[in-house]
Length: 194
Image 1 (cartoon, rainbow, N blue to C red):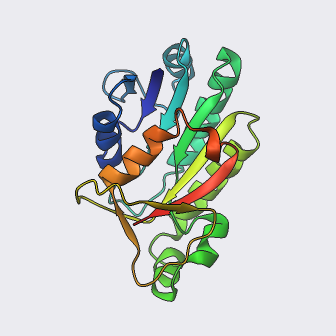
Image 2 (image 1 turned 45 degrees about the horizontal axis):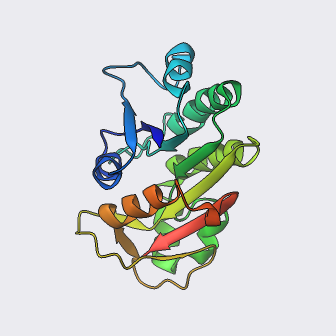
Image 3 (image 1 turned 60 degrees about the vertical axis):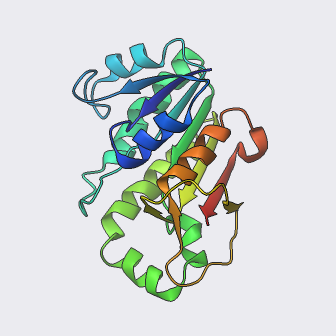
């Protein structure tokens, strides 16, 4: 499958590239392709001929959103619609939108304080995705770690979680890649954790 990956240079993006054996992955990077939030023609050119698009975009360790996700989806979604590329997998974050209510108390406090701007932007972007008419899946990983792939991933629209739930980037990436060929979560939001 031909897959276009946004956010390939981040921790999760690199893990997705490693887990995507058997697929042809094209990485869209600012250095080589342009800015996903403004370069509409570059994004359209990259989307053309793909079978699916994955977004692993994020702000890394920054607590400033700079509206990255909503601005990026405002460019990516129309490009996919115009080019007839239907499959979209977006990694958002646990605690965004309705998943906030699934979070343990300490996590909720963190989401509402330190991450409030980042999460507000992600919520807007996720709403764009839901209204896009594409074959989307929104993946909400809990706290990402650099641990190894365990193959033990819990996935659901609702999960019972305690303390500070987490998942390795390797496990999250494997789940994301699996969605390329598994339609089970198409049109749904899925929380993943170990």
